[in-house]
Image (cartoon, rainbow, N blue to C red; front, side, top):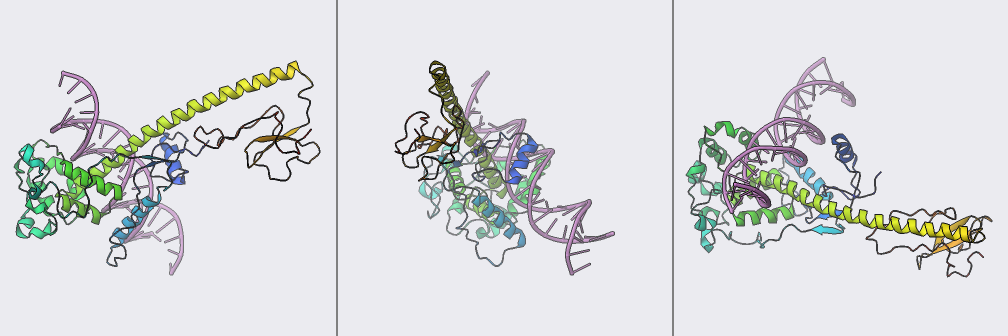
Length: 353
DNA sequence: TCTTTTGATTGATTTACCTCA
DNA sequence: CGTGAGGTAAATCAATCAAAA
């Protein structure tokens, strides 16, 4: 059963069930069968892609761009609940320098003594500073003591920064090549994290060009940027799942309450029927909702004509003592909740008598 | 010392592309 | 020439580990 509620990956479209996703969910036996329009607070669009119209794209790049655009389409712009996970100090791309650069005296390294996140200058950098640092950024002004993080493998990776597509495989195998050096865990500076967050708000996935560019800007390896985005996506999804669960819990509680109320109402009606046997001797009845006031009118159907014939009914027919409740109408968050008055006279003058 | 956060790794899966029969 | 099968590379994700705060 699908109720149109999506639990989990909100980068998927409202309605949730692309065949691919559905089959995946079925396969993993993890799908809860709910889909709900709860969006993550990013737009995912990549319309501002600077490479757009770039005729020099390789086929791989084009494919990646298409993939990213696909992911951009995943997000509904009408997400009813938006989770803003990014309470950030705004760091705009228009800034001429990074706030953590030594130029504005805001360097994390100053307080920590050194910044393990900063890369040592590679041979190529030393030869040609522009190879890594954008001319407009102040990244090149970093003064780094990176000796504890340094090893020959990383140096070779750093030297290969421009080869963003190859860094992954080499990085994967890097652990064996650390020659016994314990992995020193990086901590990105606040400013680096903030910049990555800003980028994530623009695109939650990166194509290779973007990845390498971002890595250059932040003086990180492309693999680090990639990992950061991976983790960010995973943790965003996790948080969203928590929100979804809360929402569904509230839905469930409200529906339970609604069900209890309807059961009670049904009991009362049955009691009324037994105490007054003539009361319920009505012909088969159609419940017709008035589109203007949303009240349900009771009309007879045994003659084939409905009392509210002037307006098309918005609900379907039921037997006199049963009423099918549209799940949408039971939506606890619906602001248009039809009321069910099976025995009240409709305000239409033509109600059955 | 314990908990939380977060950078990183690993294995699985999907997809696109290529080659070959 | 078109087609399906098999191989490969790349991207992504889920699960997990572990260092740092």
